[in-house]
Image (cartoon, rainbow, N blue to C red; front, top):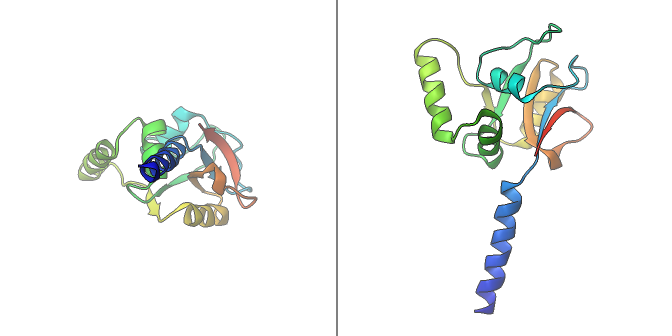
Amino acid sequence: MKKRIVLLIALTGLFSSMAGAELAIVVAPSTALDSINLEQLQRLYLNRANRFPNGVRLIPVDQKSGSPQQLEFARKVLGKSAAELARYWSRRMFSGKGHPPRQYRDDAEVMEQVAESEDLIGYVDMDSVDERVKVILQIP
C-alpha cells in the first residue's frame, strides 16, 4: 500500500509539471523581431498572416502532433484541442487556403532548425532554450 501511495504522488507530480510547462517562442538571434504578442502568434500559426508591420516574414514550425508541447501550444495559444486543430487544417487544405506548419520531432529539432534560419519561428519548453535562439515570448 505504501508503494502505491509513493507511486501515485510521483506520477501526480510528473503530470502536473508537464501540464504547467512554460513555452518559449523562439527565433534565430539574427531575426529582426524582438517580441510578438499572442494575437500575432495565433494569426501566424493559423496561416492568416506571415508578415509583421516592420516587414519581417516568419514561417512557423510545429512540434510533432500529440506531443506535450504541441498540445500545450494548441490549447494556450490557438485555443484549440488536437481534434479541433486537425479539423481546422483539413478544412484549410481542402479549400486550398494553406497547409499546416512543418512538424519536427522534439524541442531539439525545433531549436536546430530555428537557430539556422532567420525566417523560422517555433516553440519549445522553456527548459530547452539555450544561446542558439532568441526568446521573443514566454507563455506560462
